[in-house]
Image (tube, rainbow, N blue to C red; front, top):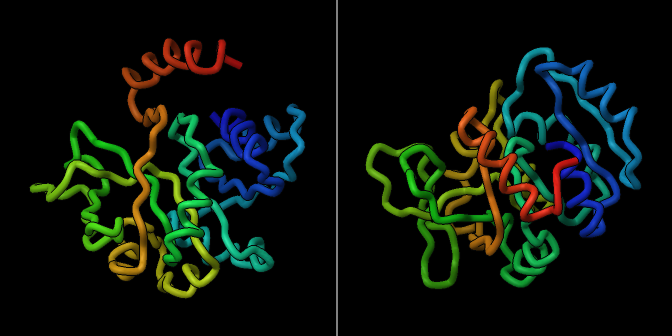
Length: 203
């Protein structure tokens, strides 16, 4: 999964990536040492998980010279057009632009409601009664001021603790791409079949 993400980032001109590790940290270290990639990969180990937003907060220096940066959940397999996502973000001029997909089970996802200008006007993390079937795909692009909104708490999660603070200041961009959350054995088995069709075979 990490190799697919590095290939995808490289194909879209990303040259520096920060990878958060916690579980199986040593295996990730050895894997990064074993591969060839044009990307400069920095690892940050969290003995205590800081959360998806907490990781961004403590690694603010990593992106201090960037106007925009991507955030990706590495347990998602996708061939999303990151260049188009970045262009959409720059065009819409919001603090962040969330990649979205139509979720078959939105109550299991972070659900987004958009207005007519594709501005995020509501976000609910795994709601019992979803107001939409549009869900956060685990990939986004943000401007540097996004980091100023992240609260000082541990753990701190993007969906639970940050997105709700930015309603009206984020855009949504619907992915026209393959996306699979590798979160269950069944989903993993499906990915084994699908990856061959999309990438011409597994790594």
